[in-house]
Every structure is written in structure tokens, then in C-alpha cells.
Amino acid sequence: MWSPSVSAEVTAGPIEGANPSPRQPSKILALIGPFGLGHFYLGQTRRAVLWLVLAPAASLLGALVVLAFEDSPNLGVAFATWIVGVVVAWLLVIVDVAFVRAARMRRTSWLKVAFFWIVGIVVVGAARVAIRVLLTPYKIPARSMQPTLLVGDHFFTNKFAFHSRGPKRGEVIVFRFPGDPSYDFVKRTIALGGDSLEVKNGHPWINGWEVPSCTIGKAELPSADGVSELGEVRLEFLDGEAYLTFFADDVSQSGLEGPYVVAPNEVWVLGDNRNNSRDSRYWFDGSV
Image 1 (cartoon, rainbow, N blue to C red):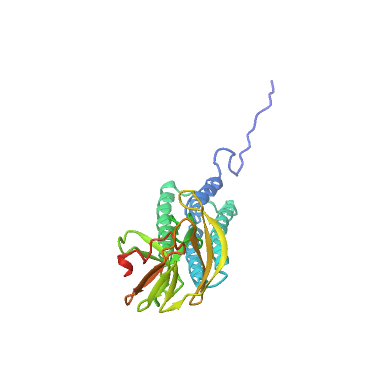
Image 2 (image 1 turned 90 degrees about the vertical axis):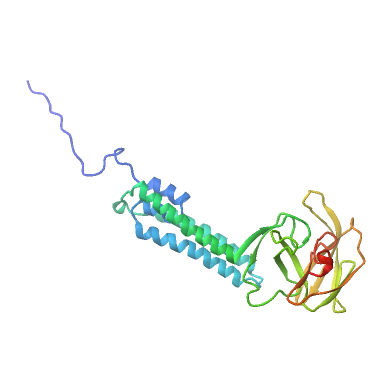
């Protein structure tokens, strides 16, 4: 008796479900790992190394560009471009992984992937350290520099600004507190070495010359404890710098302070919140 035979066809391609594509894990690795990790998982070693080197280098270059625009009105644009560029580079890595041709994929062992991840963390960490050497981030915890810097504000400092010159009058600087170097303070430079000055009702006089200022009006500013302070805002002009100062209503003006004489190779600083600032007026009897 005849019965139909059952034949099986063997295909040359991969059997669905038997050999899952490494593309999906590579996308996840590209998303969470250092630059190039997803490419390395797919066996694209050259592209992986290229991304690992280029992305941190581009980020470091962006930091240098920000420094170049330090005294430019376009500093904010340069900083925003830097941040957007880092995000775009991260997205391009993910997109580039998605376009690796299937014929060129070869899955790399997880042990080698782990090794590349460690190398990537070291490279990215080195780039971050280099950027922090150039641009150190800070957060404002107190109100002494209001209204220029409000409580909770974040900002960066250029650590190389004073390698070729000293601070200028009117310039905001970050320095280690003379009484305890473990603390960083941020104040405005008012006088330089050799200057004599007085502070009259919170307003500086340098070498007998009154620093020009004008009244802007009343303002209410926040404080660290959540209680707002009301006071008068004034605009000062010092050696080409124009900046706002604040005089709180609930603190009595101290009248005449000084005279003080600034020692050579030192600077004398004030907080912009003139009635609520611990600054050179109160350190070592105004001698620092």
C-alpha cells in the first residue's frame, strides 16, 4: 500500500529562535555602557575603539571651547552647545550600532565585553578628571552672593584663569577660606594688594575713591532656610565690571568699616549680599 512520504527542507539561513541576533543586546550595551561597548559586543573592535576615544576627546574639546568663551556674551550658547553635543554623540553611538550590517556581526564573549567595559570606564573617568581640572562645578549653599548667585545655583570655575594673571577688581572668585582651607568660599574681588579701602554702609571706597553705583529698586530674594529677605538692589561699577548688590532691610547697616590695607599678593573680597556676608571685613580684623 502506497503512503506519502514526508520530506524535510534544510535551509542555509539561521533557524528562528535557535540563534538570536546580538543586535538587541548591543543596543542596550550602547545605551548603558561607555562609548563603543555595543560595537565591541558585535565584534566591531575598530569602531568600538574609535567611539571610545573620539567621544571623550570631543567632550574635552567642548570644555576647552567653553573656556575660550569665558569672557564672551556667548558663553551660555557655548556651554549649551557643549552639553547638547555630548547628548548627540551618545545618540549617534546607539544609531550607529543599529546600522551595523548583520553579515558583519559576530558575538563577542562576555568576558571580553567586561574587559572592554573596564577599559572604557578608565578612559571616560580620565576624561572627566581632565574636565574637572579645567572646569570645577560648585553649588551655592548660602545667600552671601545674592542676587548674583542664588541659593542652590550651580556654576563652573576656570581653574586656569589665574595662571597668567591675578584676580581683577570686580571679578567673582572661588578660594579656600583662610581660616580653614577645607572650605571653599565664593566672593567678589574688591581691592588688590597695596590698596586701602573703607566700607561705608556696605559700599566700598578704594584709595579714597567711591565705587560708582546706582539704585535699581526693591527685591525679594530666597534664602537657604526658605525664608525670603526683602531689600534694596544696587548696581555697582568696578574696573569694567557691572554687577548687582543687595542690602537686606532686616539687617542694620554697619556704618563705617575700616580703613583696611590689602597686603601684597593678596586680595580683599566682599559678598554681593552686603548685609549678610562673612567676608574680608570679618576675617583676621580685615587684614586678609
